[in-house]
Image 1 (cartoon, rainbow, N blue to C red):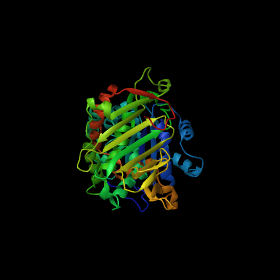
Image 2 (image 1 turned 90 degrees about the horizontal axis):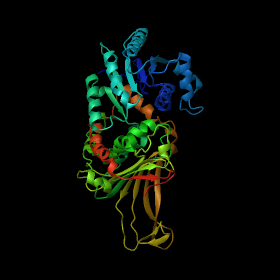
Image 3 (image 1 turned 120 degrees about the vertical axis):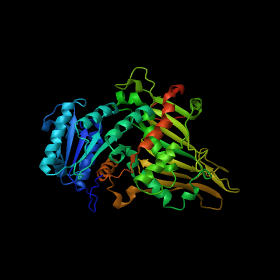
Image 4 (image 1 turned 135 degrees about the vertical axis):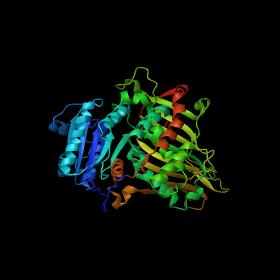
Length: 484
């Protein structure tokens, strides 16, 4: 398969066409186009590069640009106006229905015309920024129109970017994977879980395997539990119709949460490249114990924020969960018996994603520490906590105990913290979608989910989803910090 030549700053040199299906949608405005503008401003896109937007609505070229410019999720002054203008000079639009073969014929002719203008066969990257229900039709039409066929002379590649959720259970995931396998090789398929591109998540592996201080205690002998939290202040925010069909468990449990678990629990990969790391993540996911229906009442909880039923698009009387908590176990020698709590919800007091690793408490004779819950001094367990804060404040912190000043033998907790924002040279880190698109251009799949990971995650999630109704749905008020 063709590999792009990159210069020293990571710029791809080969001409590339980026086709976005659903370019007028929310994801393109919030994530994709700002990321592409960021890559363009940093001069990391090829000199010969263009974006073709494909969507159902009819626009003139100027109407389309005005619509997209008005919806872009960028801060004032984030990019130079000159860079934004020049970037949009590279953006064109093709109107068509996703199920219309004629529209794909027009798209194919537009791609051919660009290649002819450039004088060579270009790379083609297709992004499906559409609801998952449209994936199959788009993929089949791409194949029929020959748009998925790479350059005959081997100079340019063809790749596809697919957003989560990848299926809605193990059967639909397998069906979609089978279809993709007919059209593309595995190295051409880039399944997006944007959390994998977040800097702190990437840093988990470096922190574990490049610091001898922690790896010896990274096991069931020293760790009492792991708590993975993904809380959002917002509700469904206009996504009611889509969200109501999937719920929190499928929206973030099957992907983000299990990917975070795998990075914490995985063994050292044989190699720190895409093949080695993805295999290690997949192996860990396969080790997550299946929860039986009779265990759900004890190991799982679910809830719905008050007012969810009034959200536009939500069905009357919907039982879709906006919150869940699951106690998972990894059945291997390293972690057997250690609970991994996966907890996520919308409508919380604040938005934060973090992983807390609790090390076994320590009772030392003659040493006291302040009991924070009662404001008294007592002989209580001292528990070190290692936290990876993914957002909003990207950091790694460790809670440890020191002796309080004075003659008494009293210990108190203190925190040691590393923040990316405190390091001046890290002030311009690429965001997650910049990193993902850049890696898709270069062919690096480390930050994308493999077939094995997708199927392993669904093997764990599907039995829960199929018996979810057996778990009582608790209604909770918006603005809570935690749910009992």
